[in-house]
Image (cartoon, rainbow, N blue to C red; front, side, top):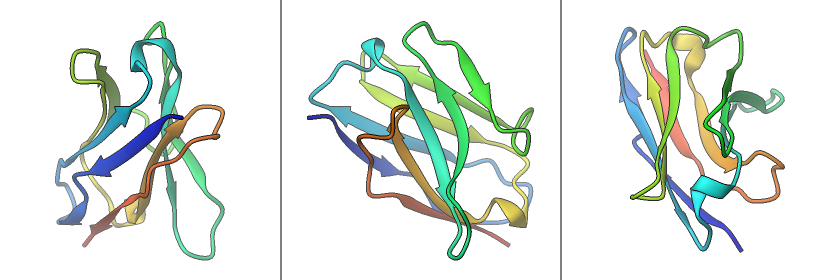
Length: 112
């Protein structure tokens, strides 16, 4: 089955621009819809952005204009470019298939 491994999180100052990566194994990302989700303890998980097999993208209103989802077919890797970070972007970020059947382990992003 699909395996996903995120990286790129950490502690970032407000206004920073980190990029999250998600290496996908066992399935070609050109053929599936993938997304980034985030969760803060005590709150519901939030969909951040998705990109489908035709590279159509969708974003949560809270990140529209600041975040960009993309994928590198050759590297089989999903990315989330995060710009103009705010403290309210602090969360555990997960990559997953859009049907949410497969998840990575998550990477923490803390904005101060």
